[in-house]
Length: 161
Image 1 (cartoon, rainbow, N blue to C red):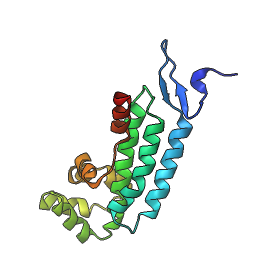
Image 2 (cartoon, rainbow, N blue to C red):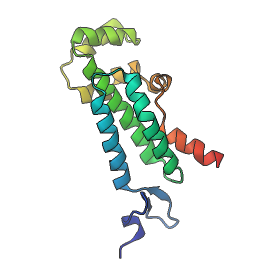
Image 3 (cartoon, rainbow, N blue to C red):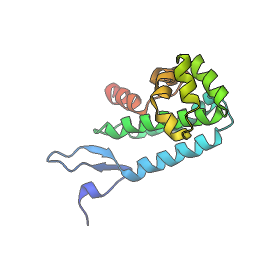
């Protein structure tokens, strides 16, 4: 026997409050993150739209299953993490500094900032979280590509039921 907030049941767990709330079990969140990593690993040489199309049914199904959660913070963090992973894939696809500079300019960065960002020598994960990539590829950019937000989907499902 253990406390309810230390146990998971069907992917859910409870918070440790006077009035407990339903939240995600850590194991289910880790399982989804691993699934997203596998999909993105296959997407290194493919168009980012195709990768997002492959991600969409997984995210939609997962959001539908976990639409009962009360604590939304882990879903918000998951959305941010996913966008950063996608930016990381995109940064890797733009292999050379010249390509990175050209693409960043095309996404609206000024010439000097694009040049500094393209040749900064930092790794893909760092650049994916840097302000230049967030400015060039904001959340709206991913929305236009068709990436669904797990948080928004859960909110919409909980409102409609």
